[in-house]
Length: 198
Image (tube, rainbow, N blue to C red; front, top):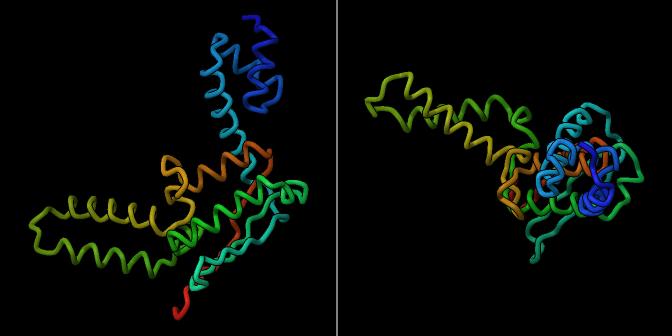
């Protein structure tokens, strides 16, 4: 199907995507602009997945101190180039991640970084809660798995619902920015301080 170049320009203006990507998306959706926008988002996330293996050594460290100065966060977020690191959009992303950490108190960036000791302790607690429930062992196992998933969604930063848009996770947010910048972005580490806490 031949695509009207005016439509391509319009889609490009709406999304900031490249001409070829806009053309492909419009061809795939039969010239439907709304569907083409959705298609570009899918393409962007797919490209972002590929970029996630690339090394990210540039970036910034952001600090957030909550009003009252009793809670503070330091976070390091990396990207591939200092050009991206210096953009206002990247700085906003990093600051939003610092706000997320302040608000939700995650234990680690990803579930893989949560110590096995903590995970085992959680399992023990869930098993103890179900003791005497007269449920078959395979059902108890499923319930414990479900509770563990919920635990990871609260404890792992990348799996938490984003506080400014709970329809997506922090991981989804990072992928959107990877697609937008065309560079890998990594939340490297963070520290959350609350006055009087060890």
